[in-house]
Length: 582
Image 1 (spheres, helix red, strand yellow):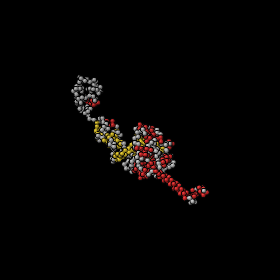
Image 2 (image 1 turned 45 degrees about the vertical axis):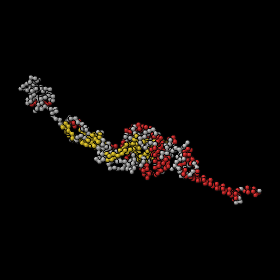
Image 3 (image 1 turned 90 degrees about the horizontal axis):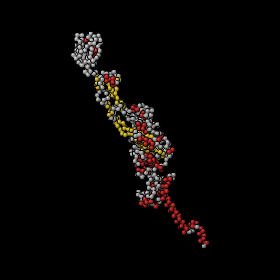
């Protein structure tokens, strides 16, 4: 009994250590084995649950996903079940009542039926989900905003010099607008067809869109919002609705842009969602643009390569899936050095708004039109196509009180021929006093083939090279040159000439009686040519029908000539020449 009590008092562990009791040794070995197996199972489950995942602890939504992930008991599932593409009926039934939290929180807005959906944490996988239509637009109320981030930013980049061209002069904004077009030549030149446009934000203030339209502006890209380039929080443009409504009312076509600072696919989806929400209810005419920019101090500075392409692709894909035409705003550095080998993936699919300003379009005078792109001006050389070109960051437009970015929309190309002036006859003859209009039948043909009389004028010079009026030339016998001038809107001014001779009027139209031959209608009282109807009285034989008043009175010009008997017949001819009625 004492020995048994001593054994119980010693304990199994002590007895095991002293190797005095076989049952104690066996029980402790079994307990250790069970403990080791349990710990190993837990470790295996943890390793499998974390395979291919990267869940930052500061992301609440991802932590929630991790919690759910841990609840699905990977240890009890086979590898075939983990990789199955189709959810089982049992899982669908369990999850059909309410949506599960995904790796992106409520981003997709749809139920998750499969554990596999929770394992896609990369931007590449999220982009794939966007392209498959699994990612829905985030509600505006769920997008965090901070209006303090809405600050005026300045463009970052190089201002280039326009390349020289053989047929087209380099535009000079300091000169009159007319000198900014090519000098007329007989050789055709190829130019782009284009529309003038601007891009604006609330920082342009209240805009008079009617004046903008009258100043030649056809379209405008209007900012709807942006993301702060330091803190990275989204905001709305306070004048977006006002600008869109007033621009469309004035007849200006509207496109939309979002000032992007997205550095992940998730942020790109957030920006696209806010843009779509802002555009609802408006008839957007032109593309919806991701205006991605960077510079010193911008949060976007490190982004490049495939990660950059993914961000652009995600924004544009979601925009397109919601019924808008997507486009990207990029400069040369973004395209060549950031996208690099991925540029064809973006520029081969989406429209490009190209930021490449020329120094020659900086306004150096108060003239609005001196800083506009004009037909025949050169465009940037490029190996990739762009539909929109931002050619100035310092434009002046009527109706806008601040500087504004200037753009053109390239609509294609046109071959401009030499303009023409067509006149019916290059040799014209009229008589003095004859009515004549030098513009009758004269028309011009523009370099684009349009027939017109606009901007067509003429000038007349005499044989001495002096300018005369049309009325002066019509009444004066002589030879004249008519110089016709046409000002083509694109190719400049051309001229052609016609010769004009004004001759004396013929005497048969209005006969004048002379001493040598009197007219029966207008009798001349001379001895050599008497008129039987109205005889001319002489000292030898007076007429009883027309008596002579006094022999000494000077003759008067009357309806019937009054002869003087004391005057020689040869002297009376002066009086008859002055009498035109007879």
